[in-house]
Image: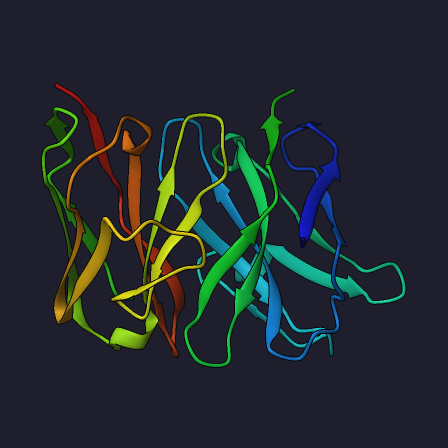
Length: 121
Length: 109
């Protein structure tokens, strides 16, 4: 059974960089028909897609966040990572990593449990 | 960007009743790229429906999806106690990526 687990700093100061990692177990991150995504959810609000990465390293970001986001992959460790720079209080959210089926349907079928990141001084 | 609107915002039902949730897009969506998720408090979203009408693995057949173009519907034929949750629709657009609707909360009447 595929599992995803987020880890990283739960508290980030304004203007600094948020860094999270998603460890994938029970399957290979190099699987051809899937890519790997980050999605966030501010407390009490809806879902916002941040971006995704293929195992090859190709990325695609939400245009509204593109200037601040970097997603990378480490296939040797079966994990991928998110960096979001110049954070503000508006970036406070639960951050989820998820697997994306991209070949035919474009849906997110496996999700991590989520990790709360608070932006505060 | 394709904006998704969901209605109603909250749906109050008794167990055994039928739930009809609407997702409307600001422009036409490829039906292959329309999905529905269920989210319970403190949990990650769970995929229910993909391709507008295909149930994901392990999803009970009381959940069904339909629609095309700009209007999509998630139906729960008879709501069970475990179905009280928030439901989100999601679309993919090749030029702008993914967007989610604001959600419909199904709660107990």
